[in-house]
Structures are given as structure tokens and as C-alpha cells.
Length: 477
Image 1 (cartoon, rainbow, N blue to C red):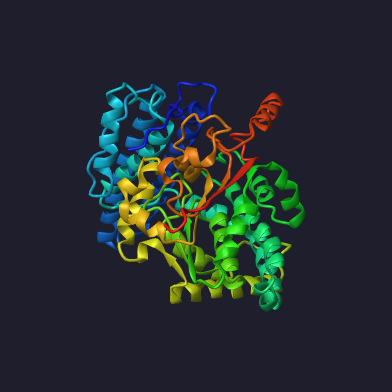
Image 2 (spheres, rainbow, N blue to C red; image 1 turned 90 degrees about the horizontal axis):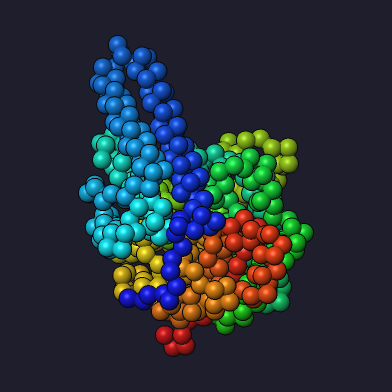
């Protein structure tokens, strides 16, 4: 197994993102879960009063769910207490779900070096562990098993994205009349490709586990997708391999290649992923199929689950999902319906596929919910490694996927991207699209980084800067 020559980020550095996470972000996330379950229990209590006489079995069922919900609140409150006091991470109880043994084995190895407390554990392991533990709290209660405590939050955030979504739908509609011309004009396709890739990149600005203090208007600003905004944002891409990935993609013409998307956030970002995939399949000759890779259970608040994937299509097709907006026109509504209907047809025909629906896909997908860096994918998940090795391009979306590619260790910023991803380099053509929201960053000119540091820019964590990192696969792999 590959071991990096640098230590992982952890909260022992009180100036770093990891420390801020343990002190601020995680307690906020846990408090939000507690508040959400409290509201649900309040609604259930009112419902019991309404059905007590007319439906005794329903009232009993609700009473049981309330009691179990109170147990969940108690467990999460205990977790907050232990976290704030740097208590040890406890073994994840067996709940009949995936990866319990794997998390506990990793935790045992951390115990050997006294790195098994909340302020000493490597950040990457600890945050992955946190979401797996939360999963257990719900799984151990019959009435709550499999419940997604972030689903309402994800849906509300998605609803706030209507203005940008209608704008993009109209933009895509305008391409349709140029479709035939575009497929034979690589220069025009390149211009559009760079527009699409930036839209897809900055769609990652919406991350519910990180944006704990932003109002809907702040989020809408982050999601601005007009051409002028894209041009201005190009200065904030500290590593920009757009030209290199386009040069590679052009070699794939008329080969019927597959594109794989390793997804990040649900909602607006998933919408932009669909748009990007649609552009590459519908308007270019380079790809004929797209496989989307989700997480199997709720993860880092806003990551895409299979349920989120399905709900995205149905929500976009619903005429009442987005609240009324003064910028929305009947034409833009029709454009969105037309585009998403095409996506649904692609799903029905297998042109767009969720990874869990392919042969052995459920097992392959487990890897994304694990605590490991991606360096050792070929050893830990050989079926997944084999699948991705057959891809024309694998796009890794977002901050967490980037951290796991680079192992979330303290690489010098000038470390070449292929060095940072270890033995995974060359396994398949790889494109990482990431807005910077955590400390690790590689492939950046040292002088650029020093200049930003000297200006006091929090370029590693603010989400204001981004990295577009491409690495081709080995020839004749």
C-alpha cells in the first residue's frame, strides 16, 4: 500500500482547516441534525393528537418513532459533548450496513499511535468516520433506518437555484440550432467546452457542509454563470489544465467512449454535471455514454445519493418545484422541460446510467463511502479500478474527491499532481474539478502561492480559488 512522504492534515495545527472543522463546522452540522429531528418529532406529536381516536395503530407507530427519534437526539448530543472534549473515537457499532469492519480496523491502527481522538485523528479519516457513525445512529432504530437527515436541507438549497438553472436551460436551448455545425467544428466546440467546464467547476461552490453561514442571496452570487463571470473567474484558477484535457478529448472522436462522473454535491452542482454530460454526449462526437458515481448513504451533508439522483430529474420536471421568480419566463420553463426530458430519455436508454445500476455496481460504489485516499483503489477496490480503466475520461468533482486523490497530506504546493495521487496516476484519464475549501493543494507555482499568502488570501479554503487538474492514462493501458 502506498504511503505518502508527508503527514496528513489534522486538528493539532490550530491555524488550519482541520482545527476549524472540529471546533466550528462539525458542531454546527450536528446541531442542525438535532434541530431537524426535533422539528420532525414535534410534527409527529401533533399528528398523534389528530389520529389518536381514529387510527390507533398509526398513533402507536408514531409514538415508537418519536421515542426512537429522542434516542437519536440523545446520541448525537453525546457525540457533540465528546467531540468538544477531545474524547476518543469509539468503534462503529454493527448496524447491518457497509464498511463497519473497515472503519473500525482503520481506527484500531490509529489507536496504536494515539491518534484516535477528535483533535488528533487525521481529518480525512475523522470526517468520513463521522458520517458513517451518524448513519449508524439512524440505522439502529427500526423506524429511522436508512433515513437521510440532510434531505430537506438539500432540497431547500436546490429550490434556491431556480434563476441560474433556468438561465442555463435557455443557453443550452440556443445551442440546438447549431448542433450539426458544432459537431464538425472543433474550434467552436473548444470555446463551448471551456464555458461548460467552468460552469461545472464553479457549480461546486454550493457545498452545504461548508456554507454554514451564507444566505440564499450569497449562494445565488456564487452560482452566477454568465459569460462575463466566467471570464473574471478564470484568474482564480490556480492550476488550469483545460487546454490539456481538451487536446486529449479531441483524440476520442467517433470512438463511442464512456465518460465517468465521480459526483460531489446534489442540487445545483448535480444539475451542472448533467448539463456538462449532456453537452459532451449531445453536441460533441467524443462520448456516447455517461456513468454517474454516487455515494451509497448520506455523506458530507450534500453529496449525491441514488435517491438524490432520481429526485433531481423529477424535481426539474415539476412545474411547481422552484418558487416563482421575476426573471423566469414561459420560454425558459419550456427550455428546462425540453432539456430534462432528454436526460430522462437518456436514462431510460442507458446513455446516462447510475453506477449502482450496472453489473456489480453496488459493490464498486461502496469504495466512495470509505475512509481511504484513492491512491490504493486498485488494491482496495479492484473491480472499480478495472471499470474506470476502461473509461474515456473520469471526472472527479469537488473538494472531497480532490482531497482523497491527494490523500489530504501536507504536500508542498509545487508537488506535481501525478506525484500527489501516487500509484493511481496513469490508471485512467483523470480530470479533477475542485474549488479550494481545504488545505491540501498541489501543482501550483510556489511564487503564486507565496504571493497569495503574503496578501493574506485564504486561497486554500475560501472557495474563491479553484484547480483544474488533468492527467492522461497510460498509453495502451
